Length: 272
Image 1 (tube, rainbow, N blue to C red):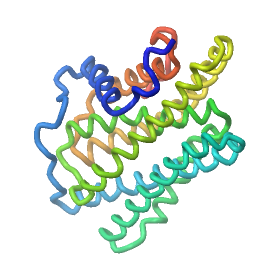
Image 2 (image 1 turned 120 degrees about the vertical axis):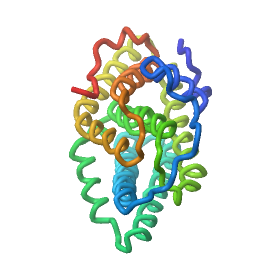
Image 3 (image 1 turned 90 degrees about the vertical axis):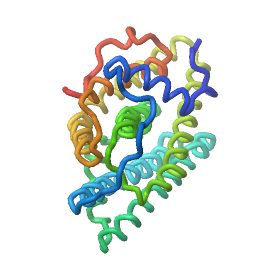
Image 4 (image 1 turned 60 degrees about the horizontal axis):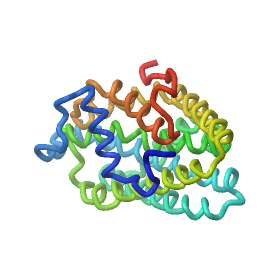
């Protein structure tokens, strides 16, 4: 039986898990920020934040498109899952719209051409994995909603610079929206997993792990680039982020697949 009930999944559990993982690599990582980050002070810092908002908008729009395709294909005959995913689709669309609006106001021009370019790169990396089947869709959700928390948690605790103009939207909308999406997806999946017979569980979890590994391999160069960008844009301490990411992914996979960490075998590292 699973040691994590689906109804337990939420920010409190995620924060506790993350700190357990992170403190294995950075014992002194603060549990919470000691002082608020400052706003950008130079044109270069404003430009760096703008570039990050372009990437964020493309990330959110990619999720919208991937979820929409999965609803139309993988879950075409499952209105329960379609309804569950509709909140994620709508919220991430709204996040992308707000990022575009903010960028347009800052720059005086529509950032859509840049967003479109980054969006195409997301699809080039992911291919059809997000809508290849349930296993591929879950691998997509794990990577784009859950594993990304390692980077976000470190930045949240160590960043020296922030886009203060978007702080309220990030805190009041983005964070709670994303936490809700994760709890919905994880809850649905853990309930589904618990209802499976042992043989089906073994086959299905093996397939998810294979798709998860395939996506990790495709994303690795991009993920390393993203970590470097976060350190540069936000002045965050990401020196141990690679080790934390690998450990975080392994820890989450063990919980999400309801197995021991040792049973996962050797996983692809972010540095490979």
